[in-house]
Length: 479
Image 1 (tube, one colour):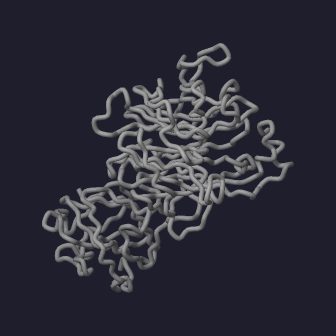
Image 2 (cartoon, helix red, strand yellow):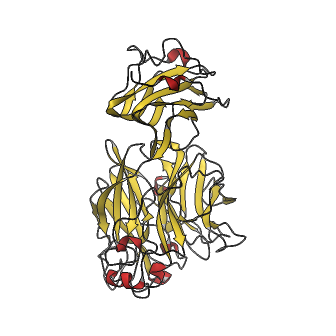
Image 3 (cartoon, helix red, strand yellow):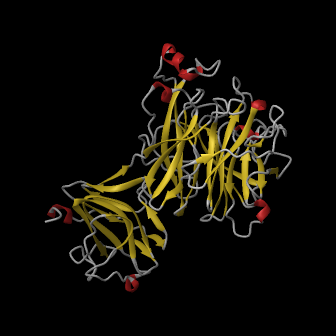
């Protein structure tokens, strides 16, 4: 017998109906989950893939490179990051540098010949602080996917500190011009990476910026604010995001963007900064050859990466309070302001996506590090060997077949049952009639006695019950 009989007990029901349409839904929160028995929503640990790109040019990269953005632009991956002159964190000595890749794995720094540094233009600098707006400190580009956007404005970016955030645009991602002489966003601290994108789901530009939980800037905890715009110039600041009943922690940067396989879901790989805590003594920092003047600052806090999600509006979920990416082994990984994630999750293989983290901050080994996950694999509904089930909330969908992203052990499996709104199995779609899902697939069609056709119930209110043993369910989609 694959499943224990106790899982047939009926759970309490939630009457709110979710409209899925033909969207892919990930199990990164409880939005679609009504009840579970002997199952759990679990966070998955990305696989360490090693150094992606060393920041090792002593002339303009030095050891305080950070605030990185990775863009997947058709067949080209683009990396933007803050670089600075060794021995100073001064804004006037910072630049925005650029690298590119064909696969998101192997990176190169092209000689762009755009800006002169120390009498030479053979460098990968794409922006300097000649305008005095400090945009290079936290320059954060994105590809504008708004329908009808002119080719001359394919790339957009926000950056700036003190005076506010300034808007930039570019046709090629290399030559940037400012859209407005004045800052387009003001009245916040902005002293971290402030990220923006065109939201297909909300049909407007969205910016998640640095704010604080206290009554003023630099008071309380670093947190996330939200602003929206129809034209990228005129913005409405909507205030601080609602994180629900979760503890206040410093979120140094939020790194939030639409997930590329489900753009209605915003996923953030945020830097959690724990102040007043140190893993290193002064003696332990000395062998690390920290940047001049950074010995004390290196011990003022520790940081890791945590996962955030939002489905639009002012709510942001921290479903998992535990670390998404922990600092690595070795003292070099426990220096303050290290382990800051780069913006965006990108696909780097047929079944793989990658996230990137800036590590070894203020050290000679300062670099971009890559981690990988299966597609949709941030988290999953997981059942143990003893078996369990998950029942969805009531939903409507459009499409004629159900596809799932799942994995099982050799001894495990998943049986899928479609029910009415009250949880009663629909004839022809019971768990006993389901062709048992065994294996490890990104996109597997579900069938019942060989029949996958769901046209007859498309548009009707249904639930889905997943009967699981030693298995993970990552996502589902009706097509």
